[in-house]
Length: 382
Image 1 (cartoon, rainbow, N blue to C red):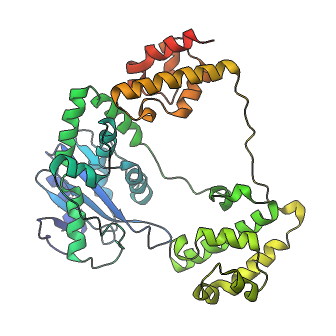
Image 2: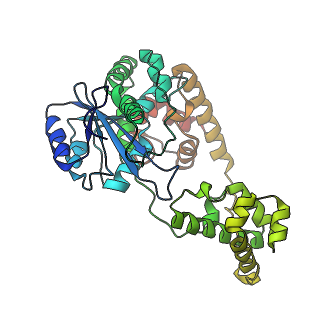
C-alpha cells in the first residue's frame, strides 16, 4: 500500500508522511473523515484505516503501519477546522478507544440529513440524492486489517470520504434556509462527546436477547456458555458470532445436552462445530448444572412504576403536541422530543423556561424553538 491511488489519494504509512500531511492542513477549514475497522474478523475490533479529504487533499492513513497517531490530535481538537463525518457515533467512540482522539467542531452529514427529512440517510442514498453519485458498497464487510490491501479496496475507501466536504456545504446551506443549522450544530456538539463503554463486570446474559425468559438454572447454563464463547473467541482472535451463534447458545441453554450423542441429536450445532467444541460444551453445561440452587442467577426485573394519572395526562398532551409539530415540520418525532424526554418533562413539570434549562436532556435549540409550547401545555394540564 504505497504512493498514490489511481484517484490521486496519497497513502500515509510513515510518521514523516503523517507530519507532512498535518502541516498541509494549516489553512484548511473543512476536513472529511471516515474510518474502516475489522469488527467482522477479530475479537477486539480496531481502526484499520482513517480516510481524510479536503477540497484539495485526499489521503488514507494506515494506523496499522504508524504506531503513534498523536500528530492527528491537534487537528481533531482545532475548532477552526470542521470535521465532517457521516454517522459519527461509532467513529467518535473508535477514535477515542484506539487513539484517545477527541473531536471538536464536528458536523455529521447523516444527522443533517435527518433534520432535512431525507427518507434514506445512508451515505450511498444521500450522495445519490444530492450529487447523483453511486457508491459501490461491496467492500463494506471486507477484512480491512489485511495487508497489503488490494488497490480496489483502497480506491473504495478513498471515494467514501471524497464527497463529504461538498456534501456538508450543500446540507448546511439547506439547513440554514430552513432555520435548522443551529439545531444540527448543537446536536453534533453533543455527539462529539460520546465515548466507548468502559469494560463492565456485569453478567453477559444481561445483554443477551431472550435471557429474561429463562429460569435460573437455564440462565446459569447460558452465562457459562457465553463465558466459554468469549474465551474461545479471544484465544482465536475471532468475533463471537464466528465461534457460536447466539441462537445456538440459547437452544443449548434450554436443552442442556449431557453427552455428545444428545448434542448431536439436538441438531443445534454443525458436525464441524461439534468436533471442535462439543466435548468442552458438554462439560460447561455439566458444571453449570452442578451449581447449588442458592447460587443460581436471577434475572433482574425492573419494578413496574405506577405513573400517576396527572403525569400520564401530561405525557399524552405532550406526545400529541410533539406529533403535530413533527407533521408540520416534516421531522422525525424523536428529533423534536424523544419518548423518554417527554416522560422526564411530564414528571418534573417545569413551569417556566428557567426550569426547562435544568432538564439536562433538553438541548438549547429545543428550548428556544419549543420551550414556550411545552410550558403552555404543562400549565394547562393538572
